[in-house]
Structure formats: C-alpha cells, structure tokens
Length: 273
Image (cartoon, rainbow, N blue to C red; front, side, top):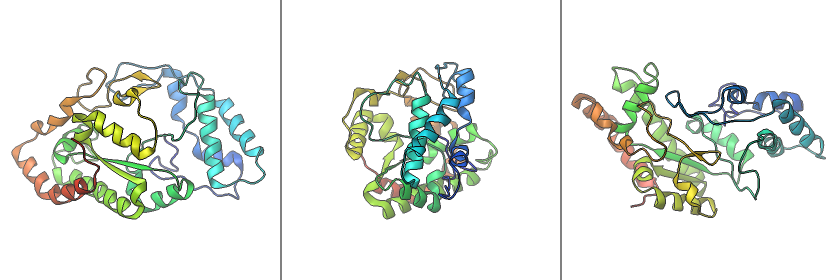
C-alpha cells in the first residue's frame, strides 16, 4: 500500500474541507498502472509475475459514489471509500468474499515518524501496528545491496544510524500505543514460522489459516523480495546467515553501535521458540 503523500512514507494529511476529487488524487497509487500493464512481481530480481487486472476509471467512480452516499464525511469514511474502491476495482482479487477485519500494508520508514503514527491511529483507533526487528548483522548486508547510497556502502556507521532510528521508534511506539503494537523478531519469523504466525493471528483476533505460513500474492506462493539472489518460493532460511558476507571489522562496528538497542527491542518483542 503506497497511499503516502507527498512521499510514500508520509501518512497522507486529508483536509475535510477539500473536494472528493482531490482526496482521491492524494490517495491514488500510481503503481497500479504499472502492475496492470506489466503484472505484479516482488523485487527486481524476481522473474515471476502475477496478473493484476485493475480498472482505474472504475476505482474513482466507486470512491466518489461511496462518499456521495453518506450524509456526513469523516476521515475514516474517506479511507473506507478508498479501500473499498481499490479492492472493488481489482477484478482478479481472490479474497473478495468473506468478512474482513484488517487490510495489511507495508511502507518502509512510515512508522518511524511520531506524526505519522498519530495520524494513523487517529484514522484507525482500532488499527494495529506490526514491527519486525531484524538482527543488524543480517540486515546490513541486505540493506547495502538494496541501496548502496542510502545505507552507506563502505561505511557501516551511516546505515546503522538508520537501523538504530528505526529500532528506537519501535520502542517508542510500543510504549505509547501498547496493546495496539506488536514487535516480531525476524529471526523468530524465519525459524519458528508457525508459532509466530499463530501468535500474530491471536494478536489480530483472526482465525489461523495455513496460508499464513506461506509468502503469497493474491493467494499464489511467491519468492521473497531479496537483494540477494532470488530463491524458490517460501521461507528463505539463508537470510539468517547474511552476516557471513561481512568483515570482522564491520561485525565489530555493528555490535558496538546496535547491541544495547537491539536487546531492548527484543525484550519488548513477542518471542516464540
């Protein structure tokens, strides 16, 4: 979900005095155009694409008609209108039937902002935030390969400052929003997938299903979005040994800069196994 505005990692600020057309323009995700034309794939190294049949003109009609049917419009209703229009226009969406409790979405860095979280929980007071903490020794090699400039290729300190900022935001969000926030260890998720996903299902108060154990898109198994060589669909256990690509000097820097914060976050995490 990339409804952020003006950047994807900034929660959109909706002015109730604005027009429905402008609300739609703010929330609209241009990426659906590319996905409709080329299909959806997860990561630039993945050759597998999935059909994404989406009617943009229909989405705007559903959005405007939804809001037009209301006697009064609230922030929540604007987002409800957008989600209804999005999934109502995704014609080959395989989970269209049945009651929905949650829509899950992910955008990097969004939860690092105090203001973003305040706006999110203002719109969704019954919403939930799921944060995943990854061992920085395994995170750093992946981050650098994903974006060498942002994460400081050849300079571990630059990237690790960003890791620390993200980890500290998890602690702040957990302390402030308490039961609405769940922190998961990435390593637990990979090694103990079923216990973690059962715990997550309990957190969301939804029924556990075996499909929660498999990375999917529209119910189809898919490969992970990895900056390393893409592997077969399913859980990628090699993500636990990315640290082996680092020098001892880099490992020492990572340990010095992140150990205390990492331990603090793990103490707040929902641990299994």
